[in-house]
Length: 114
Length: 112
Image 1 (cartoon, rainbow over the protein chains, first blue to last red):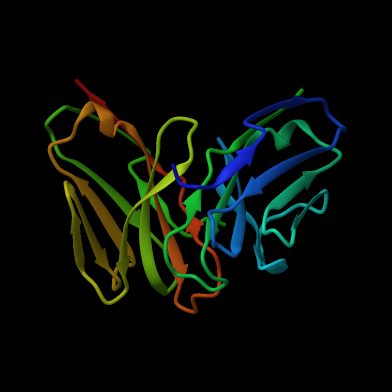
Image 2: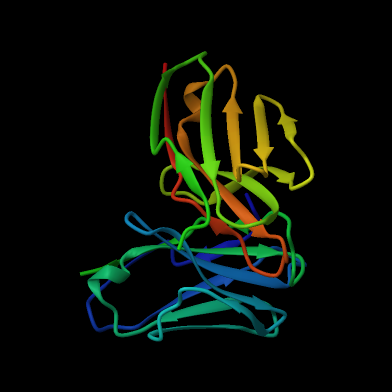
């Protein structure tokens, strides 16, 4: 158990809809990272938050947004969903903002868009 | 684009054999890390090797790093069926201010 909690574990929705994925980092970790894993693109970095502020941005679509709340949990919002958004979405956490060490991953949220 | 590229994409071996996976990357790094992912589960950190290290061991795992060739290898000795998983390399840039960038992974199957 990594200590990172993600909900929901599975989500099935229709094209055009909006969903919110939630992540609670390990106790004491200030950074949260979101990654998308699909069969054809592998594991893609989306965005990082550190202590409530956006720290780094990767290949995140404009239809996607994220935030980190004062209690350090984070939410990833996916809107106007398309079939190609079907993927596993992982949250990871680390203690600091410029960590070069390991990331601790949650079990992921599997999104299926029909 | 992906920083690390693992090779081979898939590997099937018998229990007790050694498994070797390779990773190549493109830019200068602070460190390189290997992660394991059981099917549909989260990634688990295995080992981290810094840019000034050439070899590192952890249990049955041996990792090498050749910064001149921008490559790393992960060796799992005396493999077990429970080692069946996908293995990913990930790099931290030399500036250290960008998150981990992962390759597409090697899918290892260990047959009992």
